[in-house]
Amino acid sequence: MIFNIKHTIFAAVALSATVAIGQTTEEEEDRLNGGTITVVKPYDPTISDAFKVKSNPTFSDTTKVNKKPVAYSIFSVPVASTFTPAKAGLSRLRPAQRAQYFKNYARLGLGNYLNVLGEFGANFEIDRDSDVGVFFNHNSSQGGINDVVADDGFSDTSLDVSYGKRTRGMNWGITAGARHQAANLYGGYEFAANSLTEDTDVGFNYLSYGLGGKATFFDSVIKDVDLNFRGTSSSFDASEIRFSALPQLGFDILETEVALGLEIDYLSGSFDTQGLILAPEDYSYLKGGLNPAINLYGDNYKVRLGAIVNYLNSTSGDLSDSEVFIYPDVTASYIVVEEKFIPYVRIGGGLDMNSLQDFADENVFLAPAITVAPTDRSLDAQLGFKGKLSENFGYQVFGGYRIENNRYFYNKDSGSAMITGTEVAAYEYGNVFYTQYGDMNTVLYGATLSYDVNTAFNLTLSAKGFSYDVENGDAFFNIPSHLPEFTADLVGNYQINDKWNVGTTLYYVGQREAFRAGAGFEPLDSFVDLNIDVNYKINPKLTAFLRGQNLTGGNYEYFLDYPVQDLQILGGAVYKFDF
View 1: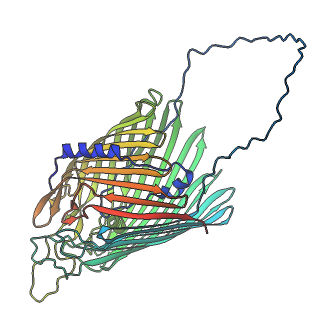
View 2 (view 1 turned 120 degrees about the vertical axis):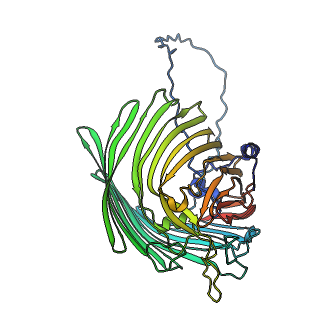
C-alpha cells in the first residue's frame, strides 16, 4: 500500500484536531482511567511519550506603588431612626456534590474480528496502612485478516496480585503475577517451498511468571531497594529465568548530594528446539553495576555528574568470558529565560541486558531458538532545549548521537526446502524472526509541540528522524532491518462536558527495509494509523465507550509478512463499584 504522505498526514491531523481526546477531570476518573478503555492493538508500534511543560507562571510587577497610610476620623451625630429591620430567615445553601470514589472496576468490550477486551481491578483495604490489589487483563481475537490463509487469532491474559504496607520509616510492597500469550505464525513467505494452508497448525504460546518487591526508606542512607524474579517458557521448549536487585543509596558530603546506585542482574536460558538459523543452545549472563553521581543545584541550573561501571560475565556452552564497561552519566540544564528557554544536555550509555521475554514483548513471532546477548550502548548523547512559547504552548527540540555495539535486528528466513514424507514444523514456512547482531551508529533529531488548556483540551505533536550506519552485520548485509527513518505521532484530549469526552491518537511510521535470509532485503511501506475513542458517562458508576482503531492504515505490515487487522470497531462499558 502506497500513501501520499503529505496529504494523508495533513488530513489526519485536521481530523484529529477536531476530534481531540477527552479526559475526565474528576479525581475518581484519574484513579480508574476515566472509564476510558485503552485498547492496545497487537503488534503495533509504540508511541513515544509526549513532552509537555506544566508549570505556573511567575510575575514581575515593576509598577507596584506603596500605599500611604490613611487616618480616619468619625464625627458622630445622634439621628432618630424609624427603620424597622425585617426578621431574619434561614438561608438554605446547597453544598457542592462530592465526587464519588470507587475502589474497584470491571471493563468489557466486544468488536469485529471477534475481538474481546476484559479487565478487572480491585483494591482491598486491610487497615489504614496496608492494602491488597488485584488486576486482571484479557485481550483476544479470533482473527480474520484479509488475504491471510492460516489462523491469525491471538490471546493475551495476565493476572497480578500485590500487597502494600506503609509505616513511619518506610513503604514497601510485593507483587506476584503471571501472563499467557498465545498467537499464530500466520506470516508465511509466499515463495517458500512449503505454503501455509487453512489447516496448517502454526499456534504457539509463551508463559511468564514473576515475583517482585520494592521498599522506599525515609531518613536513611538506603533510599530504595528493588528486587525482581521472572521466568519465561515457550511451547517450542525455550526457557529463561532472570533475577535482578537494584538498591539505591543517597547521602550528603560537604553539603553536596551524592547518589550511589548498585545493580545485580542475572539471566540464564536454554533452547531445546532449533530453527533454520542456528542459535546457541544455552546462555548465561551475570551483570554487576556501580553508578556513583553527585547532584549540583543552583538558582538557574541543575547538574548531575556521574559514571556507570558494569562488569559482565557471560557463558555460552563451554565458553566463558568477562569484561568491564565504563559509561558517562552526565545531565545538565540551565534556565536562560524563565520557563521560556531551557537548554539541556545528556551524555550517557549503558549495558542493556536483552532477554527472551523482552524480545517476545516486542515481537512475538520468534523462532524456537534465537540468539540472546546484551547490547553495549557505549554512547547515548542528546542536546536540546525546551520551554514555553506562551502559557498554553510548550515545545522541545533536540538532536542526538548513539553508538551501539552488538545491537540486535529482526530478520526472517526463507523457509525449509520441501522433503517428501517429512513433516514440516510450524516455524519452517519462512514465518519466524531471528535475532542477529551488528554495530550501529545512529544520528537522531526531533521536536515536540504541546498545547494545553486547563486539561479540558490538550494536543501534542511529536516527530523524530533517524539516520543509521550499520557495521559488522555481514549476515544481513548491514541492513537496519525494520527500523524506520522517520516517525511522528499526534495525541489529543478533549473533555466536552461532564458526560462526554473524545480522544484521538494518530501516528506515522516511515518506510523501512526488512532482511530475509536467502532473498535479501525487502521494503516495508510507510503507514498512518488513526484511532478515535469516544466515552459517555451514563452515571457515576457506569461509562460506555466506543473505539475505532486503524481507521486509515489498512492491512499494513509492521513486521515483514505480518499484516495487521484493518479497521476495527470496539464497544463496551466500564462499571465502577465498591464491595
